[in-house]
Length: 113
Length: 113
Image (cartoon, rainbow over all chains, first blue to last red; front, side):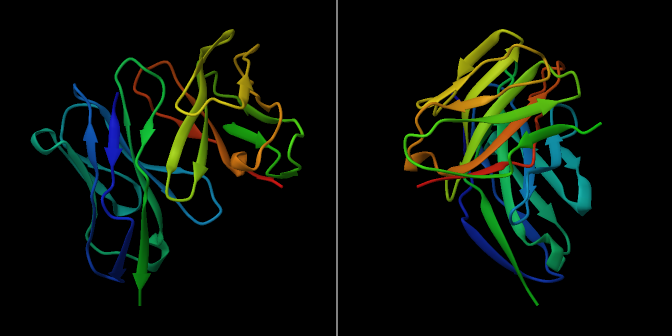
């Protein structure tokens, strides 16, 4: 069975600074990988996804993520954080041939002025 | 397209009461799933369906029932609510491309007293 680890429960970043949120997965083959964002009291919005091909994927809101097979990682990055990026971020993995996702426990991003 | 809709948005139950959380999608997706979200736990899969008439258990199925009589609807039933079922419930649907991409509803916040 697959699993996802998000090592950081909370991260605080100054507005305008760069951001990297870590995600490590466990899966025997090449997985499908996703990052979702959830603002307080809201549902989940898909930021980006990796299925195959180019290991650097671009998403919405200026986010990108890089799939590194050797490190079993799919870290999310943004070069300059805006106060509106404050939210909880979830990494998820899907096993090929199945229809569901396994989520990490989330990282809460706080943005300081 | 309305996407994935869920009703109600909020619900308070007493221990032992039963209720059904409704979920509908208008994207003609085969796959539908129910997740629950608890603080610090991420999203955990309750039940899922790969098509009308086909359902299966996820990671935390106890205390919940599902059925799928149509492609569009996937209700989640709590037969005898318990305080441990206090949570936010998300319904999701996915297409037939086999990439596990999930489209989420806005969620139902359930409190069991």
